[in-house]
Length: 238
Image (tube, rainbow, N blue to C red):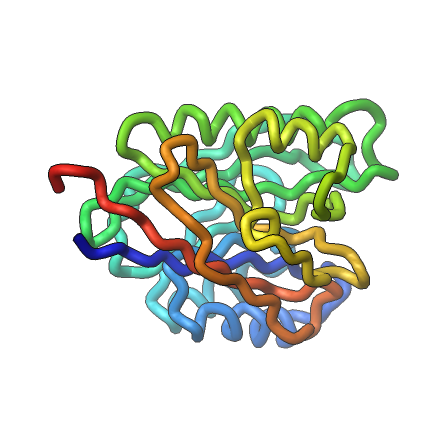
């Protein structure tokens, strides 16, 4: 039996970069041919993201609220996408929620990829970060039923590190949301000296495993983009 490999990306833009710089950053990750890329803090650069995806033949999915976006390789058949609002922290941050896309790979695997942008601790006036984590866990639990596969990504604004005990970390573990960094046992910096950006899996039946992940050199954003490669073990009988 052969194993399919999915390349998943995550990139967080910075609202202070100019539009030309944002376009270059979008092209950088898309030029590597990933299966899916999730973007955060992209709202003011949707025009540049549309252009980059059109030039690379990627399918671009934009939510009705929030600042995320998802680009899907043209070889995949997109079946649905939606945005599940979690909170609306106010005019300075806008609505936040889980943005997800459902697609089928050329090999027939049914996959859900979900993207989110967590608030920072300073911006959270209650437990909105915890609410986002629980919402992501609920989405993944539903999305990965049966033979379906679930992956998640985003800027968690929560340092990913071993044995962390914040309420977000504890909720991630309780929800079976495993980051590529936890799976690989290393935690490279993606923003300053912190590991805030992640790609992860929801894998209760152990069908997927992270083969490797890479943080790319810093471009124009204050976050570094990353790629993660996952192998998929075929279902028995297929």
